Length: 334
Ligand code: 3EB
Image 1 (cartoon, rainbow, N blue to C red):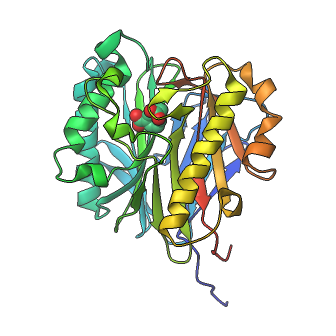
Image 2 (image 1 turned 120 degrees about the vertical axis):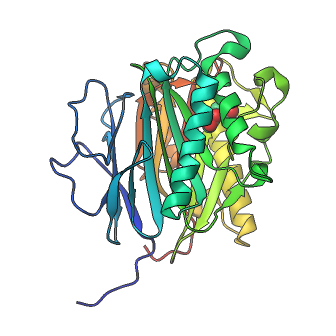
């Protein structure tokens, strides 16, 4: 059989439900929803955020190379020689000191990556219950950021090598962290319209959130831009308080600025509209916002863009929504 060179060792797709039995080629199967029946495959990652509307709530990461999967260091993981997918779940009982829990989680993540030979972080997803519970510096999210910073700042130059991230409040209890890592580094991309999160002023917490706005990664024959959870922030301030439609527009402008920065670094004179979205997630603080926002989605993010809408808390109380996703830069053959 003629073999064509794959553009990339994995594919992302969406489904209405998870396959009854995952094929050997699955790296990860992320199921969004509440009250899901338990799965017995460690590659299934359950995130208890309610999907809104008809969006297919299952994200499948499928490999074109042989996959090894298992459990180590408390993580479930799957790898294919190019990319490592890892997942850690912490029950509420282990989160009494969120700063310490975050520190330990990041140290363990790093240990797993080193051990399996994927030392380079690309992207991390963090879902925790009650993300904005607690006042001032005692807020869970701020305590999480404190511990994450303590772990990541152990490495010299860490602010030039931060993973893209999403941090969203989930519903039931506990913490789920999953991540992708590679054998060689991606490139951190920051947004000229917003202050880098790792340089936020003190008012947002005792230590700033250690994540990049996006990571750009060259694969065999394509380049992927992993866009962090992007909110209606300009400079370091939340914009358009109380107005979800204008927040969504500001988010699009931020994602466009990120894409332009990434494309500029690649020496490409393209725009966001030339990039191919593999999929976006839209997180809404209040589910009722979906009705007014849905008509805006095609015009802001493209008519054919798969968008999964989820009800979830944003980690700043004045923000109503956030968008994250993956884009393939122009020039791949797919
Ligand atoms: C922001 O830009 C909004 O702490 O990992 C977005 C994505 C946000 C990731 C994180 C936080 C994080 O500050 C919040």
